Image (cartoon, rainbow, N blue to C red; front, side):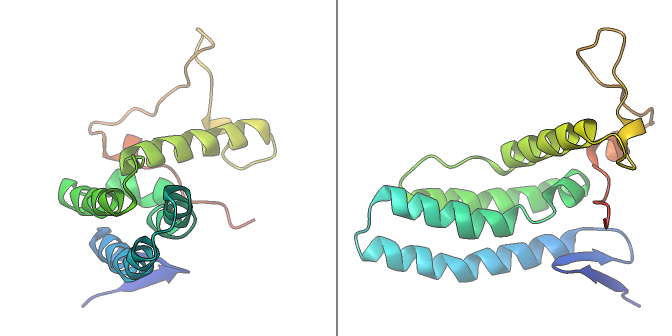
Length: 154
């Protein structure tokens, strides 16, 4: 029996794997690649091609990335990176890696939580005595440390 929960475009399976989510993201980005190739054939500038990638394709790839990227497998991450590399060849410019996008989005999210004291996760982000790093949760494996928490519905 396969149980699927879908939050807008985030798919979670019964076994808590992200395979369905990443395959859906890859499929969506491949559909939008047609338009990127059409813009390339029209001999538009690199700036327009890069902007199209950032606004359309990258926004699809980074949908809820702070939630699912930490729990995805190496195979799924490579599939997503392959999409970015192919689009990089089409645009002819250096595009950010998926891992870099995940890291920057998590940092931005943590900074927003730190600024908002009534936020439900504000208490989870405690500074260490050095005042330069935040306390990390203690776990036996890195699985739970890599996963950022779900967005609050409010």
